[in-house]
Image 1 (tube, one colour):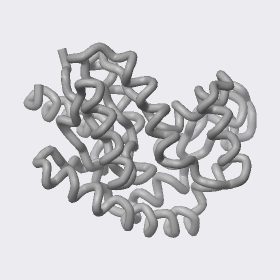
Image 2: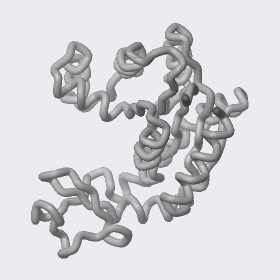
Image 3: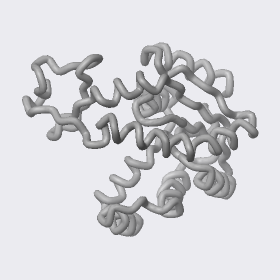
Image 4: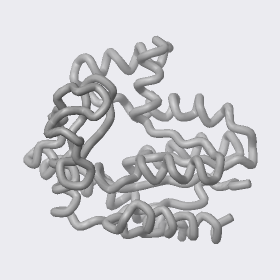
Length: 219
């Protein structure tokens, strides 16, 4: 039984979500991403979802405490002794400190933080080449996973679109902000001696194999 809480750290495009899904299946443990939790809360019209919507509708960031409350609600349902994956959270030092308080109150702790490392230009190619089906939400890539017919979803025959935040200028601007906030976070976990770095530029299979090895050694 996998018992540790594992955090995946890395900017968009490095494959954190893909690896989180693979590892959750391999170890039969839960995984959580803040985006998924927010969408679920909005869909179910929960009190936290309603509060989050007021910020999102006005173009503001959802406050750290609200996100922490969402995560706490999920973690509280997990029995002691069962690990889980946090995909892309925490993103700041303040969030990490808040998460530690929650985990301690629920008898959990972070046993491993994995930094997904990738050359910035390669990451930009990955992101700018992504295409999305607006109907079924399947994701494609113009170079690595193109649709069978140009610009059309294989399942819906709907024209694929590029997300607004997959624009190169947007990506570069967000990268600057990302690294400013993430460096203190990485140092926080480095000082705890639980930070590992994984080369995310390799194939999905190779990255998966490396992380499974790290998990097995940890457990």
